[in-house]
Length: 483
Image 1 (cartoon, rainbow, N blue to C red):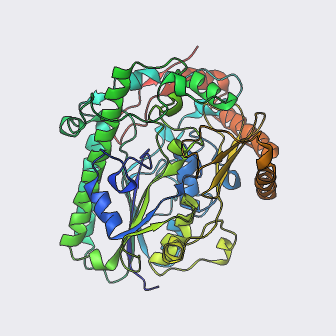
Image 2: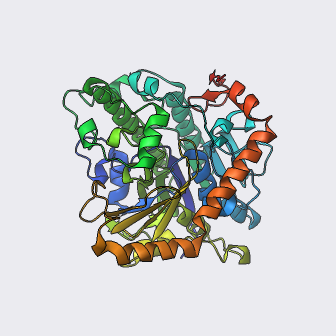
């Protein structure tokens, strides 16, 4: 594979099907659609943990959350485990970042040659409140849904600035002789659920299709899901008008995101870099969008755990749909290979594979893995998905099995179906070969308790409180304290 530049674009909380190229009937994402048409679209791509900080650590290191111990949004990546950026930089390649990192801070070696306008976790600590797993205070997610709509936010401004910075960066490096890697990390369509008015107007609230299973009588029930709904304040349903306005705002933010990506891709063309640059687009996790009465992320259902993933450029098949299951830990070997760097002996046990190879191959069987140990959960949950079946093991709760081929909305749990006994046994054996579910759950809680003590104990964490969203650089967080 010939060494080329790589432009890695990451968004935040982009639901896998909220794009035209993924078949959505109304969401307008013409630039992503065009990228997919001239490249490969992965139909079964997954996050390794459906919450920002842990999955960004997994994405950086190419290792699962339980292997690296960045369990939740209060335990951010600090360079302790080498990243793909470290691997490129130590071999002499320029690897820069623009935008959201959600790492611990600038004083740590995050693996980049330069980080431009980075967004780190709040005060270098993040959401330590989420590390309280035993009788934590409940969160109030309802205002964010009720206040969704058209307007302006610092996140919208930040993404425009990030795109501007990306355009300027490409102009500065158009003549570089050695391949480079640019990590452009955008925050949309992450909450606040605010859309620019012109994008909001593209989605008439009385006409747009709503997410499936949004009505209470359609909600699926499981002890783990019921607890998370209660924890977030979603146990009572929202009225249809609120859900419609929220949905239009989210779709509008997706279109706004697409416009910023389009500006950067146009700059790539204008600077004569298109033929020498491989492009990857994906998101850190999905968005429930009201499905099953949930909003945000935090679940291992498709709406939260599946992500869009598109690749284009030299050596990428054009117009191909790849059905082989993949996950974000595959990005580490992919990025190393793209620029002509090499994996080292320390990378021999990485769980991921190069996406360039997977894109060129025929579809094949493959199982991907995800896990959740963070805010809104009592115990760990683990997901194994092979593209046909999804198995979810909940510590202390009943397991789940879904036939995604026949039941893509995951409405019919097959865990008690005698005909599926062999399938369940196979998945559980595979999971326990990877890890000890109960021991990992216990370790996460010990580490989280230690993290709480590091910042002064439970009382201090409660007094500090929770914030709704990580502020952009220069913006102060707004805390809500707990007694």
